[in-house]
Length: 218
Image (cartoon, rainbow, N blue to C red; front, side, top):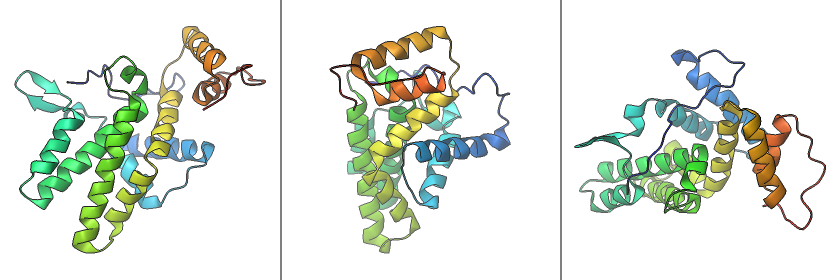
């Protein structure tokens, strides 16, 4: 199955000019750190830098998508996992695992809404991505004890869900919105008490007094 993603570059908010290429990393770093503070997620500087570099790299479609006979497409995580298992060298195995973790984190964090219409959901990406980073950490640990790279992948594996939620907030903060968006997120919050929907509404200036009666936030 090929996942169809209709957008790759995160859209800046209305009050921002087009982000210059040299400022992309700064933009993502500030957005990431702010979201981590809001969600009380702590991480090493090396791990934050890794995620920032990954986000900046994937703003180029040729870094996210791979060329196939029918054009550019996003390789399914299952195929990347197969490549890791069948890799003839440790270098190729680690490359496939890293790619698998990066793609899973990027898609689950910034394009979670698009996954709701797919056969596989966010949980699948969280499971596959966390496992990929975990295996990569073990490979690095086996070869080089525990260097800086291994620590980064260990942290990403252990806190994969947290990083996904942080990237959701980064994406929510940078998308252009209109009245229809406010109505949509209010409906989500009213039906489910979803924390993400509440945060988005509060950024729109909608004051949330209490969670919907009879619903629990998750």
